[in-house]
Amino acid sequence: MKINDDIYYIGANDEKIDLFEGQYKVQNGMSYNSYLIKDEKNVLFDTVDKSVTDVWLKKLEKALNGKNLDYLIISHLEPDHSYNIGLLAKKYPDMKIVGNAMTFKILPNYFEDIELESRKVEVKEGDILNIGKHSLKFYMAPMVHWPEVMFTYEETEKILFSADAFGKFGAIKDGEKWLEEARRFYVGIVGKYGPQVQTVLKKVQGLNIKMICPLHGFVLKENLIFYFEKYAKWSSYEPEEEGIVIACSSIHGNTLEAGRYLESYLKTLKKKVCFIDLTREDFSYALSKAFQYDKLVLMSSSYNAGVFPPMEQFLNNLKTRNYQKRKVAIVENGSWAPSAGKTMKSILQEMKDIDIVEPIITIESTVKDKTKTELEELAKSI
Ligand code: FEO
Image 1: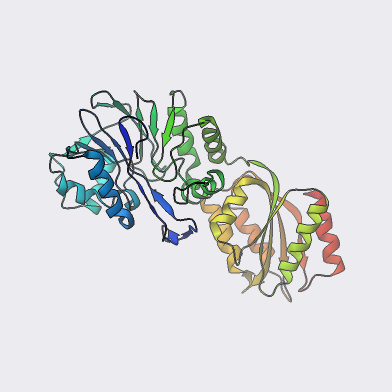
Image 2 (image 1 turned 90 degrees about the vertical axis):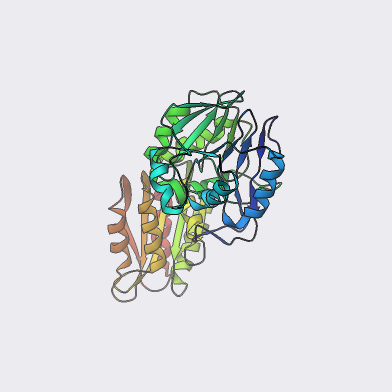
């Protein structure tokens, strides 16, 4: 598929995948993008995951139409993009491989048989590769999402090849929306690296960009400021909007009942609320919602003198994504020695800039009138 006169989209969808990177549920599949620029020199941006090798290779051969492949640019070495580098190196013995110092440090870990000395073109920040009508300028983007990641700006058509950045979960198909699945992808995969994302955004913010070609999800062609603003917001750890996420982990259903009571009471106050049952919802949806809204209520059973594991995992996942700048309330449940509140609070205290709402509310086993009154007070004050 052509995305303009000289540039071809040759990526492919994996619609059978259930877990991306072994942990993120992807009910709508996943796309692995790869782009070919045909010019005096033919240049490929990245290979694809092993699951879609055959489809991708046929598209590549068709687009090249018998011509040689002169350069492979490695934007990102993670196997979902690099799996087929060895195959290409064999198929195109004259193909040069373009990467940066870190690319060539990591690459032999995956492809020890590729002879690099004659092939490698090592680039650094601001270097330009002229391939005919098109010229390609490289911007290093370390930790977005691995240390070797780099963006490439195609100066003639004004296209940004952005590696994982601006990508999303989900196969490319009609009706796919960007925001929800791009946020879940960002928070889950790149969320820890906000400062590094901000650094690369600053590098490219002055460029005249007409199109963004990410390695996952569709090519972005219109209203590009929207996508940049979302990335600026997410990487700053500022909430996108006002609203309350109730994250609930319940053993026997009593904490869940309390959570649902709080949810319905908040709705009577016309507050925007998002309820998540941590025992059933994929963790990445919960993380994504926590990043989206400005307030969070944690509600959990006590367990083994600590907190019920689904909540502990959720909090640890927030911590590893550098979750910060939020107001958080705590509701615990316990039948003889409630321990969840103290445990949740201590994990929250390891995060930056978290405003913990006092007091912690304790449910004694079941929801009582006293519980409802305390939850109503919390709803009014948060
Ligand atoms: Fe799509 Fe970080 O790999």
